[in-house]
Length: 400
View 1 (tube, rainbow, N blue to C red):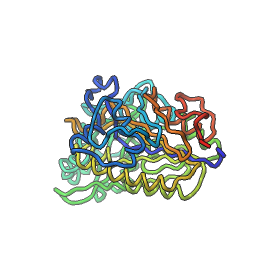
View 2 (view 1 turned 90 degrees about the horizontal axis):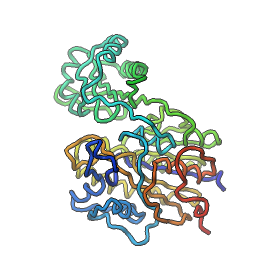
View 3 (view 1 turned 135 degrees about the vertical axis):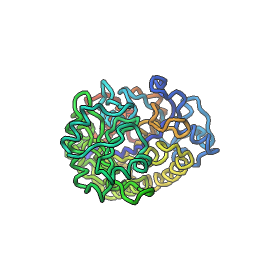
View 4 (view 1 turned 30 degrees about the vertical axis):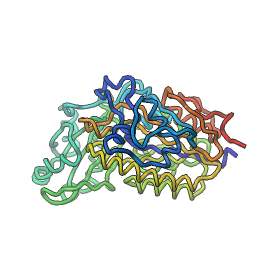
């Protein structure tokens, strides 16, 4: 039976459910992406997630929000998770779900990158650098796009995440050259400067109307350590399907089928398509719009609308799942659009575990995101010697 099974992990990127105990150290005290969004817009309408117990998970933070009321009999097991790794970025969150716990955070650069890094980068690429400080990705091309077009210098910037981002106009720097420059940066950024991701950010358009080309973005992540959930699944001869940016977050390692799409709707369509392929193993999906389009821009109404839209898409996906499928829905960090910050927030994500024949129970507050990986491995009948505990356990795995 286990050989026919699939574990589906769906990450709603940036949808936290209340501050972590150490949130104050990250200047994120009071952050609660789900509850604060619901309160700000006067309520969320998410019948699928509500029936699964997302309101029960939010209530664990002591928050009350319209549309996020606890239900008496959730159809899924529900709870929240603490993050053992330091940091609050996507790479750290996804890696911990896969059983990798970091002992130190990826480095941040609130004052920009040091001279020795940029000198090495400029020498290797033959191009100078503009900006070099934290910046909004949409604002930076407006503010530096004209100078970039005039000089050919690459726009390098960062954020509250551990990223080295490189923006260039496709008519000034060909795409392949931008990708090569990003690979060069990845090779330079090692040791103390080993950022989580180098991101190529091409854009197009004319002065005053520059726009990013999201589908041509490319990420160059640090390679994850092994073993991890993905490598364990592959070693067992099963497939790992990545939907959205999963391949980038794991440096394209142990992802046998990559459906690299951009946007929540496209990601959910890729997930549903994967369900139709009937391949045993792991389907790992990330819905990035919550974070990229709304959290980082403090767009509360956009966040709320996206949550309600994805709720319906989740219902459609669940309708395609059979008795041998286990669905785990969670998040990698917070990104509260109601706070002054436009960066990620150090939050506990909710976690929902659903299967057609799985007995739903309260999961409490889990001690690590790695419980996600342990649960997926347990469902697939695989050994798990990494951090984390199976949340549903063999005794409740399948009801009669």
